[in-house]
Length: 422
Image (cartoon, rainbow, N blue to C red; front, side, top):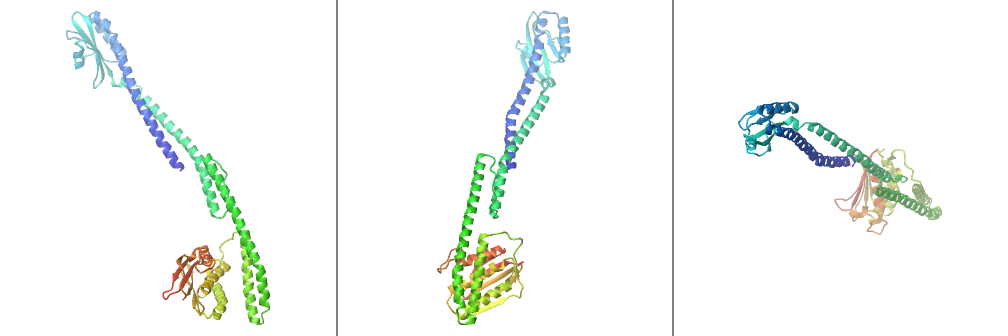
């Protein structure tokens, strides 16, 4: 923007300079020509009294003296054809002046001035002088050089003023852009120091207000999530007590383990909602171990509902750029959808493999399939919260991958998570 403003001002300045200085330069040249012509005419007219009354010898001496003083050729054409002073041919202008008409004509050597002198008994006498081109343009080159220097100086001054003005505009815009990028990178304490024109100061104030409002809303959201998560502790405690009262020790141990895992998840959610401290470096988890653990957990419920589980894992460890609890939450969301949206007895498969520099986790079932827009947050056609697939999608994107929805060739849903490999 700064360069464009400078280029615009330079173009406008050059056009203005050309529009004013070029006519002025032509005017100076015309004035120099007219000034030289006036001097030559005045010198020639000073001979009129002598030519009209004196004898030829006196006229000759006066003409030679004037030619020496003016450094211009001066000639006097007598009616009898005698030429006094500088030798010159009888040009058409001289012939015309011999009829009694004074005039000025352009020649190859310069400007010809002829004056008809009447009153002599022998006829009309013609005084002729020539203004050389050098005299007509004397001082014009120096004047043009001064004008060119002045025009260049004016353009440079305009560029300097434009550059200073552009800095006053570009610097606040640059600060606005920098603060916007910092806010986009979750630096919510970034603020703009309003400066520049009134409009930019107003934009800076509006951006600061927006940043403050976003920070307030995020704080409120985190507190609400933390409060909601904290409220889950009471039913979890009751559920633990119920589990401890089960008669079958194996069932009690299994349910208590599930309650413990849920309580850890709630505690992590509270901590993450209240304190979102940036992590130093990438978080790495073993995808093979995490997937095996979660499939083992869900296999108990699969056995109770008559579902066959096909588990195909690449030999571990398989490091991925995602936290273990986030990967577990994503897989739980996908497996939970299988149990929630397919009838009992529907088999499902979990596969983990590596493709290039990414790890591919696939959960497929033989149920009725899944809608393409189900990945939208809050969108669900089965009466659920609509957050499961969005949780999986965000976990995949956080690792540099993506989530892909598809259908199996024989029918059923297939959800694939592409995860960045560490």
